[in-house]
Length: 157
Image 1 (cartoon, helix red, strand yellow):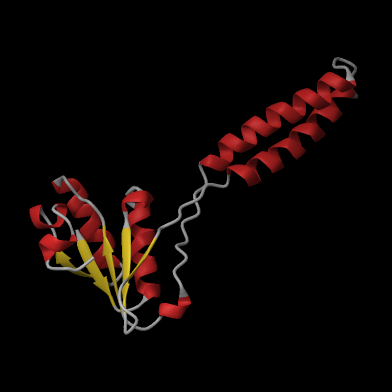
Image 2: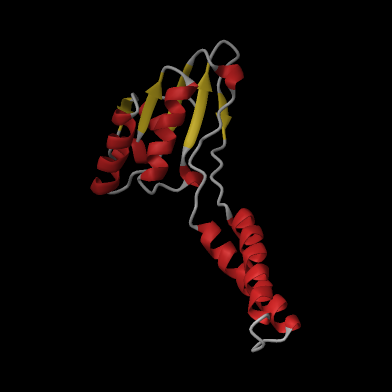
């Protein structure tokens, strides 16, 4: 399915909505059009696993150190065990936090932006349409012509 936006800010909101609708960031295509010609931009969608691991390791170490004061755990086991378990738990928790902001180049603020995403089933087409329409996108193609690729919809890639 394809939608055109008037500016990168609106296109960014459209991509964020697609991500919220569980579309894979790797399959979303963004193409800028202006006087310099078309330019494709890659969508980057990151987790916070690194931040979670660091915070988990810190908190785990603190909890492990505190556990050693009870006398039931040796200092080495408490600190190392707390560090390891906190690191693992923090990394797993960080994976669940997605960075939903789409960073598009500000230098291309003028001109249209094409956003395309595969929507093979009727349900996915409805979700893509909802994402595009709620963010101000004008739908260019959907259904069988959209799944065939940009050229089938008359859009040069």
